[in-house]
Amino acid sequence: MLLCTLFSAVMISAGGVVLNDIFGLPPRLSVTVVAIVTASYTAFGGLRASVITDAYHFALFTRLLPGILLFELLFRFDGGATAFYQQAMATTASGFQTTSPLEIVSFVMAFLLGETLIPPYANLALASKTTAVSRNGFVFAGLFSMLWFAVMIALGVVAKAVLPGSTGEDYVLLTLVKFTMPHAAYALLLVALVSIVVSSLDSLLNAGAVVFTQDIIRRFAARQDSAALIAGRYSTVVIAAVAAGMAVFVPSVIKGLLVCYNIWAPAILPALFLGLWIRHPRPLAGLLSMAVGTVVAILLQLETFVKTGVGAILPALICSLLAYALGHYAHGLFGRPNR
Image (cartoon, rainbow, N blue to C red; front, side, top):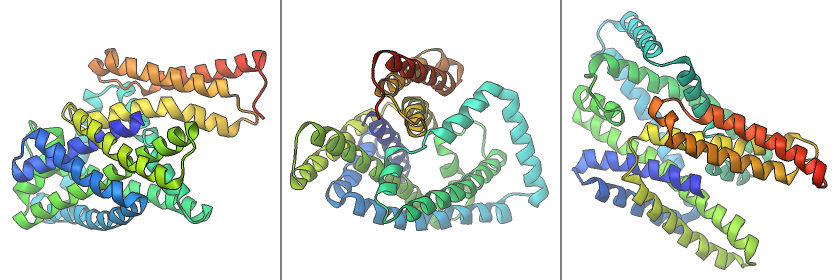
């Protein structure tokens, strides 16, 4: 629930940036509008509403963003493919000069593991009709993400050559389209960006509500489906309200995502994967791994790793794995394995 709330805060902050650019609304009002609208249809529509809106949003931005890239390359970027290649190489070389190898590895690990099996993905997989549908969905999503990152990286290369270096990281795409494309294209981009934000946000709110009703309410109090549904709706609103309050303190979308990634992976993945692979998993190992991974990741985010720019994911993962090994060994000595 904590991670769903943190992710939701980042998405609400991103939506607030877009609304602020469209209407000039104050930051607090912008995040409030995003939270209220998304929480409303998520609370009353549930997973079905989330999946349907995600499908429409996906169809919109997967057409628009590649179209923007094609327009920029054909009409705004001087020099053609050769100039683009040179700019890409220069940008990459500059990045390696200003970023340490440890930082690069940390960023790669964060984006690789940070969204692995987060609750929205797990919920959609479990809601699939068959395991084949779930498996194919993950495979095609992975293939799509490769193309998606390639498009966004290419847009970044173009922006590097066109925009001033003082452009804020959350405003690169908005500024690029605003000053290089017709106003109609900019309006469509704003709609697409809002779609991307609410597609992620409604899935996170729904996932947080599912965690609350299934893992907390029904675990400690036997409830009928109707009562659980009401509890899920209330929890959706509460998570959205808390996330909206946190959104105004998010420094930037990328930094906010990295904080979430650096906590999620050490807290969950070692216990999850080792628990699946080990023949007789031991509960103490999983609990100890999750507790140590969470605490170490948060402490490192608050201290030197934030100041130096190096992510907390690598040391926190190592501590989480060591804690799992210690818990597994201790449970074997003092308890009975969970069969």
